[in-house]
Image 1 (tube, rainbow, N blue to C red):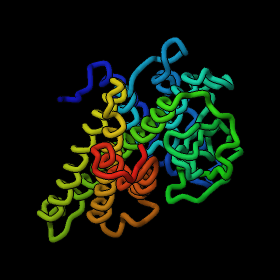
Image 2 (tube, helix red, strand yellow):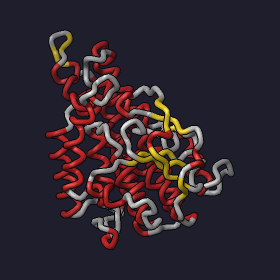
Image 3 (cartoon, rainbow, N blue to C red):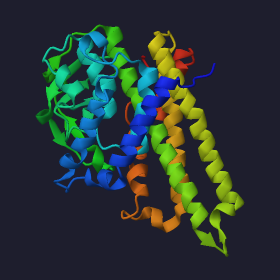
Length: 340
């Protein structure tokens, strides 16, 4: 089966890519770290533009004010967000929260503001209480575990927590079940978890592509013994292996999106496989990027760390590769360790 984008899907992806490439430079990502008081203003324009393009309401049914697009349409957009390490909760707001609020009947009247770009929603549904982007979001979605009841809380419910990636503005919610529970059936709760997992996978693929691009560009410029280090066979092999891992992960994410859109019985398994492959691939690319860049890669002045640290953080959220592989094994009847 070939999971290629349609002309319309490619056109929307390209429009988002053009916007993010122009507006979300590494300097903007760097400004998202704590200490830069101007950061909210610097990223507000990006969020507003995404709202104007309909991205924030892309996964919301048309009757609820959205575009009524599916996962196959949204996943390529989230990959573009990963490419620039967007310091905003795009997947959490547009792919998890917005369709959830629509399905629950929008109990607090937030959906219109979400679609318009006036309300950002962060989500942490793994039961840890940790919520990425809690420090900049207006509302939080939390649960005591995957597929468990989801509660809507104010942003003030989260206490700031240090993260390896400061731009994620991590927070911790101590009392997960004290918010307003959303009226959703078990299938909708599990679908929300799967969308969050797939959103993370898509962004990891995008992050990996940027790290690989930075690395291939660097090895063509950096010279040793009178030649570019990219001509060394060992360097070529490392980069080729990194590319191969990404090329396996990217179609897996699109397959998982198709399964979600079709309501396939294998959707959970396919999403888990996509996240496992994307986590492994992005971490491999990050390791290769550090190796081929040498000492400069370990400096905070160099932009590489902005993407590598996002990989290290994102690969461990929404179920790490090991957890997701166990879920795949469970779906295949090979173990009983993961209840989903």
